[in-house]
Image (cartoon, rainbow, N blue to C red; front, side):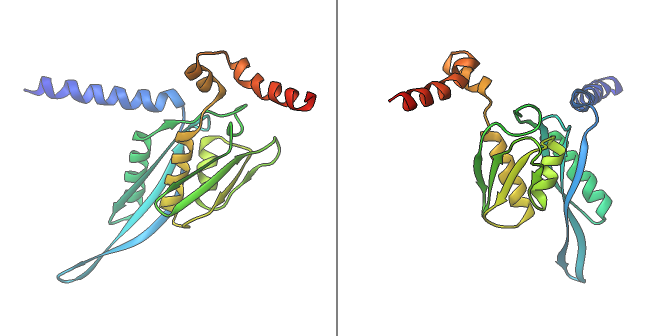
Length: 194
């Protein structure tokens, strides 16, 4: 009976090691902690909700939320959830995003713009933590809707999901990356000639 139980445990352990091993050391940032109350027969029971973002600093990011009676336990739950939900984001020159993008989640709306080298992270609150763990060094971000950190982080992740690199566009169109990037130059040349 003990033998069948060990096999799934070993398999799960290998999966977790591989997930963390591929990205190396994961960076964790606590975005928000909120005290929540549950009303019960004897009064109120207080707990804590935590929002955490994790990333490898090289284009992988995940976000998670956890609730518990104590803050450290809530943070641990949120971190575990974030590690399970890692996504890859294509970066340009390993420092900024490829193109401007706007996304929303609930009432939260964010606009992300690529920036030249040396600009730094121009973003406030939750978005700054997102860019730091993702490994973006130059970006301009603006929160246009709700300032709720949960919705802002989820809107940023939705924006990252819409992000496409020239390689992805070239693969979809069935052409080379140079052709995708060269079309902009050709179009400008035609306009200036005519």
